[in-house]
Image (cartoon, rainbow, N blue to C red):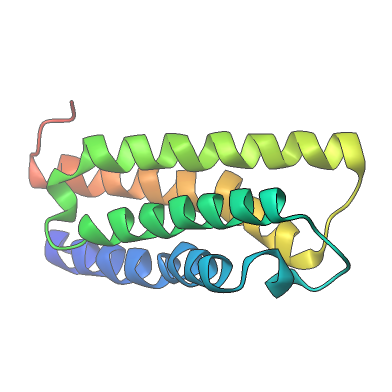
Length: 135
């Protein structure tokens, strides 16, 4: 596979994977905890949920911002991956402390602890092939 083919494939995969935090974050901002269904919730926890959804939206938008020159964006990609993995580890701890969440939350855990780190490793490969210094 040529460098340019691999670079474009990575760009496309990041664009599609970025839909998860962008759409999930936007949904959470607009609908709050009520968007998850379930029972009653208080205003403070809904406010916190919307705040965290805004952060999720921002993470997705920042991942998308790496797409045009993805081979030069290793530092930002590394930072975003670290944030996502830390969130995934917190979710994993919650799983251990409180039990199994819904399948949607388990899928999010897979994105956080498997897909995102794999994308980061792929981004490093593309950056190395481009001759971009890894800082």
